[in-house]
Length: 68
View (cartoon, rainbow, N blue to C red):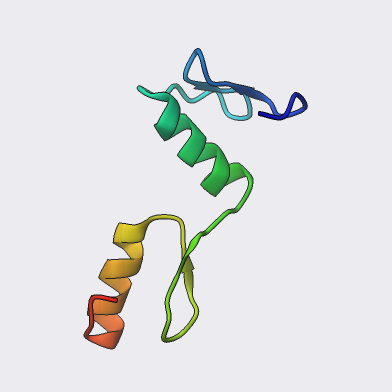
């Protein structure tokens, strides 16, 4: 972990917005998606990006009538 990031993973608290999370993984996902804008799940059809895999799957089912 980089020192300059404002993250207290051991406390489960986001120092950017003071939201408390029940696990380190949820806090990490929050920081990556909300504060860093990371959207790793990309639609192979229209290239729209999502923070969560489930959101991508729902998009594909709704707009492309597929589960990929």
